Image (cartoon, rainbow, N blue to C red):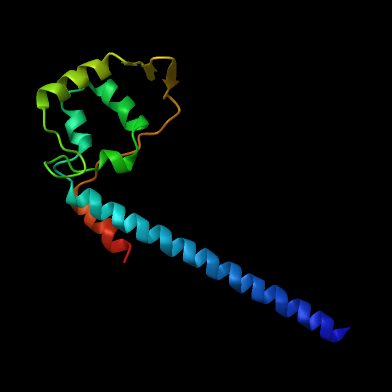
Length: 140
């Protein structure tokens, strides 16, 4: 009986240690992902989709889009040969105008449905280069 109790205690301790190692692995993976994200934001700080949308759109429309579009999309570089190739500024401006007509007070109105974005948080708020460098080094 004593030996069975000992085995049970040992099994529980092993399970706790394994759980802890899994939690540590998840934490390391999250920190690594955050570091890559901060490095991407820093690399594209002056040329990204966020800035391309911010300039032509009124503030309220822009804020709706930052709630709908993923952070990873808003951080993408906008340049020839990059993830976003803005090759026709006139067509892009026409698209922005058409998109703006689909955005109204906390709603994105699309054919067949509308999306209430009032409960959504902005997916990206640009940080300064110094903030991003600090966050990147904090991940190391």
